Length: 434
Ligand code: PLP
Image 1 (spheres, rainbow, N blue to C red):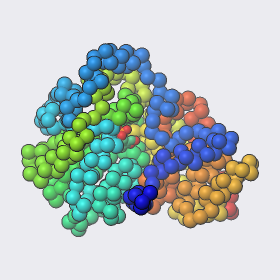
Image 2 (image 1 turned 45 degrees about the horizontal axis):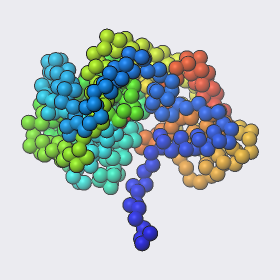
Image 3 (image 1 turned 60 degrees about the horizontal axis):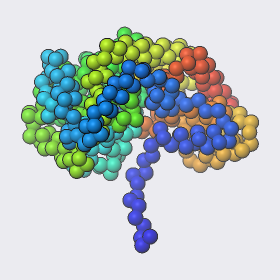
Image 4 (image 1 turned 120 degrees about the vertical axis):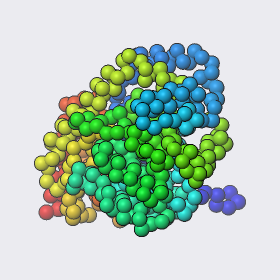
């Protein structure tokens, strides 16, 4: 090459995928990996029902499912989704207030890259990596965050949020992920209304990632942004990756609320749309399927059964882990993740787990030899010694050491065995250096 062409990165890595590379290396060396790292129900064995498949086959008969769609997305689907919001009787939107993207990951990238570099969105800490990376990439400066408190079942610190919003004039918007990834926290209506109040008082807009909004359990209910937003400008992000589940379809959308209430917000949404136009449109086929799948008589039962399964696994994991020393465990009430935090100062760089195969041992020693985060070190030893693959908590951009696991395993007995094994490994690792 004439000269170096690669743009220098932000230095941030997407550890949810990175840990897969380590796991695959260990797999090659003979480790039987138990994948507890990635939020894809399908790779964890979720069977796609026949009725869903036949709807998709029918849609494929229509040649237009192979065509481009309008830039904002298939009109009949946007009409259907707008009507769903309007039927709840709170805010009113039109199909023009809905924009489709190639997965919510794409929507997230566009949302932040359309914001001026000196304007910032405050986000939860820990936070789902795609939001964090897109926000930091757009600004090239450290993020503004409000903490979710692991000692209070991951409830956010609203005082901290308000203090920061008040003192940082560069903050123009608040991100909420509800239910949350990675913590599984479900926001109460009261807390959400407080966040809306802060946005209104300080003239901000709201981004609510609601991709898990129909996945709540343990008698926890939440409300959607559209039902409480009043006249504050905001965007709800929704998608089909988790619910149907169809992550490979790469299909998600933004619902824009109160675009007519603020000129600056309107220009911002227009900037997002301009970006989308340069790409023509998003995936047509899954958009066509949305109304048919959601309206199918089997859909509600299918989703309810899945949610009940996550509830079961949430309680199994909580009941095993709550009495384990050295960690803080909260019961998950939504989405399908559980995040565990190590107590302060229990981790050090001398702790290990037994690894019998010399090749694997030296691979992990090399990986953990340098200056790496304490929870990453734990995750690598856990993976090599037991095969259990979890994502280190610091990968969600927090200084809290811990890890995130999933509640997606289909085999309940295998899940129970995995969590028990995990509990033993936590104790063994921490006590290995005593
Ligand atoms: N938002 C949250 C909170 C997620 O957890 C995920 C995926 O894990 C996404 C967005 C991305 O979804 P998609 O598959 O539609 O890109």
